[in-house]
Amino acid sequence: LPVVGELVALVARTGAGETATFPIASVERRGTRMLWAAIPADIPEQVAQKAARLASFYANRLGVEGLLAIELFVLADGRLAVNELVPGPH
Image 1 (cartoon, rainbow, N blue to C red):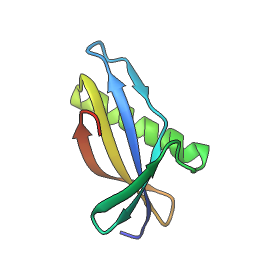
Image 2: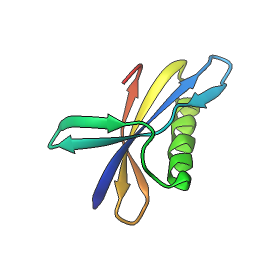
Image 3: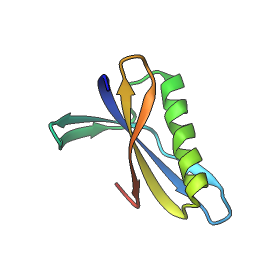
């Protein structure tokens, strides 16, 4: 995939299904090693909203109680692709 960036969306979900997302983070990597993360990510608001919606969708779909981090690739055409789902703090 033509990846141009990476984001992390962190969502908290209660047992009753209420969700809240934290500000979206941007990640800089060298190979597989993370160099740094910046919060909030310097991205258009529509991309941040889309990332937050994806995080809430997966947390609800999986029935998560607690925290879920969603690692997302930003593709050259602007789409977001889910890379990894990580339960708990990230």
